[in-house]
Image (tube, rainbow, N blue to C red; front, top):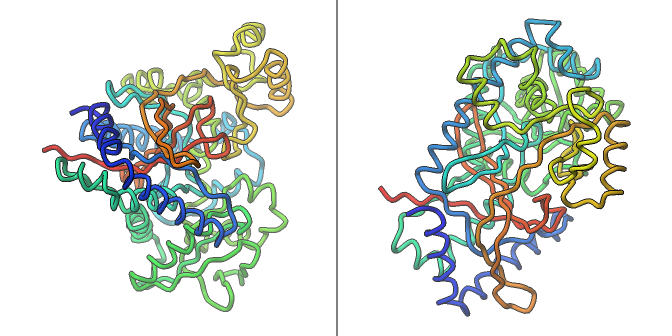
Length: 443
């Protein structure tokens, strides 16, 4: 069965067991609210039907990860070896120094989530962005999927189909262990620090990672990046020597708040700490990588097959200050374009032409030129049917755009994270819904 058939079947089961489904939804809603209250954030809205992917979808994701690991690896190699190529990116001096600092392990991108606009029926997709620094989404996805697996609807559905899900925490820790196993100065039982600016971090994820690290026998701490100490040889937090940093602080925030993160910056530049992921992942994380992959400077790096792949799966992207687009055409055809900064997250400062008035779009273009933002071809999200219970406990059905995040860990596909929404931007800050993700194995 294709995913539309699976999805329709699941929603019909929900409707046949409506009262119990409403109770199951309320139980999940309460859990998410309690957790949000505990950690001081706004609870996520969720869809009651999970995103059900099949083996064909899994193969698409595996192929995408394999191709992008190879393509991004070539770009990073060229950046490290060719000073002229570095000019294609527009990093600050400090960003470049951090990227070029010693890493001392072999994996270029241990942890990432690749967001795509994906037609799950025919397998077509376009890339949206690569998340490496601070890659998140595990907490909400895991919580929603856990509760949906215990629902009456899933009980009925899984009596017909074999359903499984990914334990993202354990899989990510596997990737961290894999990368650390190649570290030049590895220790048998490293002390691990989960590091971020705590006001920006997803703290419930951090606590779950800490717990899972400890279950594997590691000592693990959660550390605000401002409270680290470095003695020139070793990194310390609260009197403990840190052997491995799981970096969740995004590079852009480190650069913005560099005066608060001087110790961490010094430690990374020294090449004497194990930082997963190392700032070199910024080469893939910045949205500018889309224009880099399509540049004349990068063309010679790729095979004919890779160039064709980039042309097919990457929306046209350029800087608004560049000369390779028609300014008037962009103003007159706003529905065809998106403006976004190169290195912000959570959809900050993103303007989608189709959602703007003519005046708002003109302002977005001019602001983008001033701030050297990116101009990108607009991709219409693939829409699928889903349902949720509203505040009155009534089931609401509709069609929603999909944003599919593929977790790529050490170059391999390892799970998915899905958001859906009715607005042009699909994110929690734009009335988006989180969706539990599951695989249906019909072998």
